Image 1: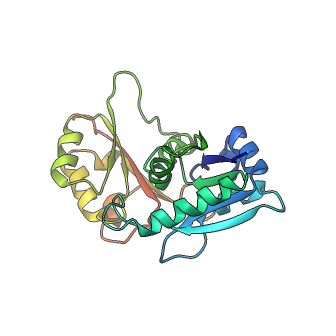
Image 2 (image 1 turned 45 degrees about the horizontal axis):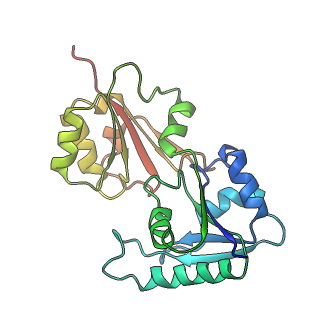
Image 3 (image 1 turned 90 degrees about the vertical axis):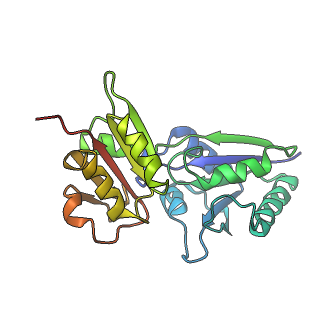
Length: 235
């Protein structure tokens, strides 16, 4: 009998924010897949889940190239897929850990698409996205009443970001590490910078909150950084 493949969102950083369902799945699997990039050792997702790992679980690190999709060079993805299918064929239960939510800007989505047409059991367990944790942690209502909320990857084109901000009352800006100065400028242009906050590495021991984004706009920011912003009321 084949094993089950679990995609588990481990939340933004605080191990106590994992759901009970996630913890139960982590504690019963035989193999943990810990995603990592070519440039860095270790796995943040694994570190978050570590308090719940059973003693004899096998940890397998898989490298996933940081590319948009994988059509151009899918060799690494195919290798990882075959390794996972091999474990499942042996009857092993396998968990793939991912930051935040498994179906929200996650590497797991690509893995899921590679595996969903195979004859295997897949169970995806949701997790808390960083911006949701930020709202609760900071006492910052993310959206209320008739407000329109937009979640924007800062890697999108400037024109696309501008058009989205124009019809939004509140925004979540993710992936701001690549073009932080440009993002700050766009928020200022759209009267949102004075009511904005950025958190880097939310829920992790070295979490940092930045309230004055304008003063920090020319400094590099961590990869795990998210901005919450709302439109400043007209005076």
